Image (cartoon, rainbow, N blue to C red; front, side, top):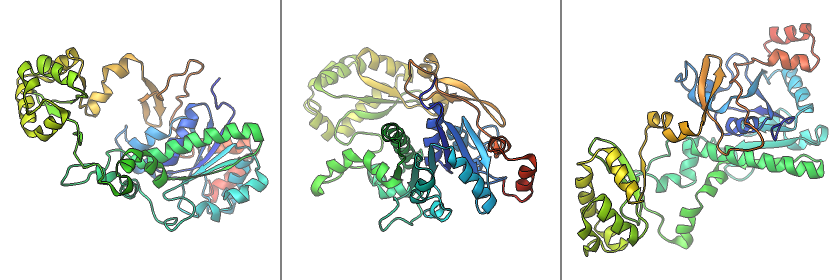
Length: 392
């Protein structure tokens, strides 16, 4: 038995934030009914064709869901949605600002007929304030939340390579819904959750915000290096690979000189005898390190670092992550069906002794529409009429 078995989630979702939230609810056993536009579905289905002709974003965030195709501009389709909501526990939506309210799906409206329903609205900036109606894409939120100002090189800012603002909002929504379900178990009443992408990512910016407290200078952009600790960051090996390493104290510095560089005298060199000095003379130290590493391949560099118990990691590309020995050893990959065939998927992080995560197929657009309508008691004639009108 999974924690959310018996819980029904209806989601008016697209892109990443809401789908990532609801996929995690499905992982825990919730029945997630994903409402999509007839024919085309969630526009994230068309982002790319990298997974057997299907979108990488969509395959990642939409397993274990049912797809109900509805044209919500048609009253008949909206009536079907409201009927589905009568049996739902949670409604999640990340439509354009105000769109759900215009369809009569605001929390204040829904609570009158569905008092136990939990409604989670995900938007760029929240349901009020001067930015309420601004469009919000992941890159824009990374910029507004200050992430770009501390990420990149001294010469140029860089965005995170993944949809980190969407992911942050999806994680906040997921945990907030779990909390709301616990609260409803005590009070018997539903609640409203207002998740802002800006606020979600701003929370993750806590360290740099406090670092720049009361007008202090912010953390500088230092690419993949550390702003104040050295050596700490990426170093090239002789075979073209890159190794990340980090030293934290003088004991590790001595081990690094003795075992990794095999130059014990460097540990007492006045240029490098403290972190402050190493940081001040980092260009000279970098040249010394690179000269040693140039004579070694990546495996040899890692072996020396491990022998010295210096924290290190390979800078993997995506192929390196697919074949990562630690993920393989822990059985992290599991096959998941999609409309175009089976693909490997990562099990959700966080092993539980009491249950297995749900890892069911990724749906085709509208794949479950007919079955859901039958569950609502609609006749074949009613379903045919809705289909002919383009409502489903």
